[in-house]
Length: 205
Image 1 (spheres, helix red, strand yellow):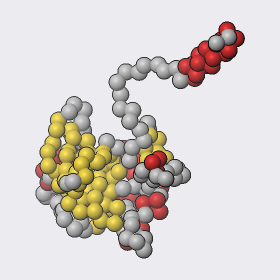
Image 2 (cartoon, rainbow, N blue to C red; image 1 turned 90 degrees about the vertical axis):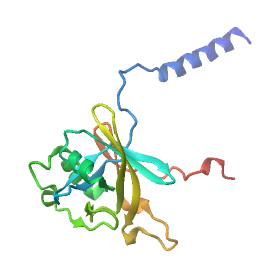
Image 3 (cartoon, rainbow, N blue to C red; image 1 turned 180 degrees about the vertical axis):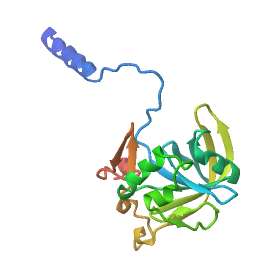
């Protein structure tokens, strides 16, 4: 390879390396974006609350299982621990301000349902209320609690999924794209962007 060509190639590689140069941060929670959901719960005395949770996700498909991680000092913690139930309520653009409010205010001081104008709905399988304004409510029963450090993880089985009928299309498919769901990334809320592909599209012919 002529020296001039080799030098040009080396320069391009150096420029590419410079473009993607990394610095090392301390270990932190940087798996973003994530869903910011409102979790509704109720203790055995009938008191209920809403807590906003970003540490949540799917952990198994069969049986359907999810998790939420909650700080033990949070007001909702004892409700979930005592009842063994909670509801994950998906959040939308219309609910984003209320989602934030329920994450920064404590149920010890205020009735979040009343403050946010949210409606308690009856769940199909659990005693905890669902948030009627949420398009999808995931009813959960706690299977295990893992103490991790700052947060405890509630591992739960999904008992039912309540879906607003207007988001089910003529084929019986849940059109989540019509719900205008939101995501949370490093302290900021975002509307979901344009569709980039569907599962398996990279290998379809």
